[in-house]
Image (cartoon, rainbow, N blue to C red; front, side, top):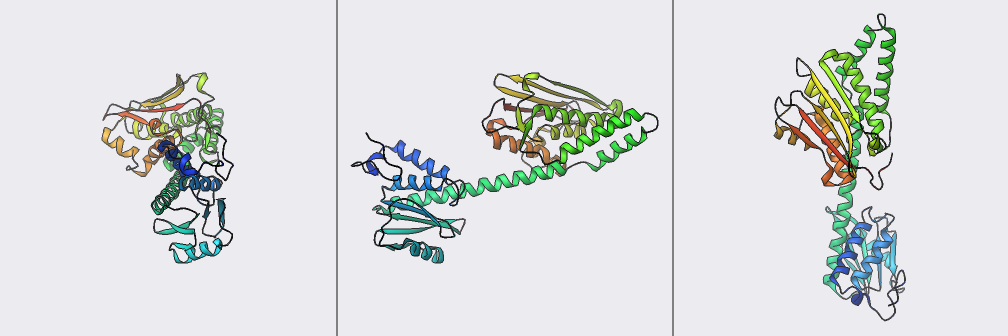
Length: 356
């Protein structure tokens, strides 16, 4: 069987025959939905138009955005002013027709998003179904874009979420060491500068396990200077996971939560352990403290974003992990009152598109 040209069917083989297989129909519909994820002005809108033409067995298909700019697949009749047809739909938000060309408004959340133009289709039912498919695809794209923007906004807020109490205590300790131990004071000041730089700098979306562990060690060095013997620290990371790429600011918020909400609340202090190791094709990192702990239902609420502002980092980290790696790679929290807390991060050691 000969393959079809880019915008036309194979000679003698109508689209309706080629798409008779339900599996082919579903696959084409899925591709159309994916191609419209960036909207009617996105880079894959022409591919979406070709897929719609296949689904409808149409002579030609056009997709127009709100500016009236249209991308088409196949041929639209030259004796029909399709630009005027699109303009009519954009102004009235109603379906319009000229001869064998029909133009339908695409309404997303009660707002006009664009226009679908089809020439030579005979099945009104199929046309309506495809229009509904496009509306659902455009709606999905908007939701994904909104979720991405929300995650970016939360990450910016997370970068700026430096505890004034911690900053004051750290600087007070550093100032107190200037005369009796200037070398130690200088060392802690450099650690403080590293901590601020990493927390506030405009990093990309991803970093490495090595950089996150360096930020953790810097933060814990400052907290040990503040808390003294009340804070005990164990940090171990296997060399084979140091180069693994992970979302920026994934581990540091977990360690800060362990100190602030676990150890600082206990008069006798406690221990924070941070371990990183390889398990098959995964990188597994755990942050554990033997501090105050919490009710498991409260931990569940925190992951859902229902906690206080100081716990925003936990929900943000969980959401970003799921967005990047899928629903199976969120945070796992093991905790109980007075039993401490253990937070586990599991990510693939190699993930396409994830690189620092």
